[in-house]
Image (tube, rainbow, N blue to C red; front, side):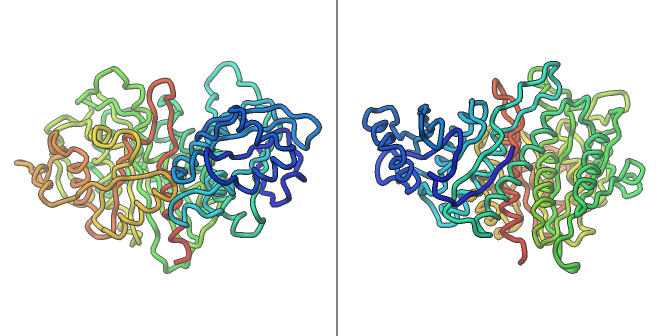
Length: 497
């Protein structure tokens, strides 16, 4: 797909389909007014006759004749006061849904001058072009590599996005949005790949491919022998029951000064989670291929970083393992020693994500990080607490937490902060080891983060529980690509500092 940005007068840009925004009430954006004038008042007539109501995310497609465009697509953008970034995003998704499988080869989108409510950083034209670019890539995603019949090629091959200018700032914002969408699509590809293909070794190969495709990425893969030498017995306890060996995947991007501390991303990469000896119920277990959603999001963020090359240093560490039951699997009641030297009584082998992450969090101290952000499909309790709309966020640093929350708001990839109080730590007390790996049913998301916090005391750290946001179930089953938009916004807002 060819995406371009243009600031020519709309009537001078020929396309198969023109897309304009129509508010439910109030003044029209300049692009819609210009299109209406070029079409002899057609949009005015459509609104007057009720064929285009302006209600948010509604669409009306009209064939044209003798115009620079063969079709007109009018998308409702709601009322000015209700046009939040989230509702604006819904209107963009509605547009993408109409054009991606439609008859047009070339679409012209004139939606960047639609006013959006909220802070300037979210309502600016830069922000809107960024979001348009991201939605175009995100919504064009298809996963069909494992179907025996190939999907037909889409007719749509070019999208021109109209903007008020073509300066560097607008182009950079649009291109960053496109790159973010491509990062999300990589995340979705990795998550949707079946677990008989996507195992730790395959995931490591994808990291090597990323480094081959982008010379600014350096990749190192640690095998089980190396991890054992480092004392990562907690991580290795998870892979003990699987024929697939664990891998610690390290990717480095050095775009800043050599003495600048890196921003470190850590991802949980459980490529399939049966629960181990603490076996999960069979229903819905197929979705446990998404238990590497944290790792997949790290990949997506790193691809975006590699494409856009910000002036900063970023390190990614992925703890990849498969959690299987067998005669060699870790048992409930086993005690292991983590890389940090702290001992862990494993009471439930289905609480394995924290067991791989804790050793990764100890390992990343070697990079002397500016901050560390880990992400994981960690707890079902987070889904109960926040559903599928918000990512759970816990942190040992208020400034870092606030920055991530703000990035989520700007990117419409939101998180909600939960407390990380010392009062919860006692739920992890063990009679036989330094700690146990579960804290009981109460506050399950919080006690899981409390566990991780014991390995992240030497740096500013935040934990993102994406159990409810990394994938969708039901008819729309599939990876969402979250929280790549939040991560990219956070990283780019710190680039060059």
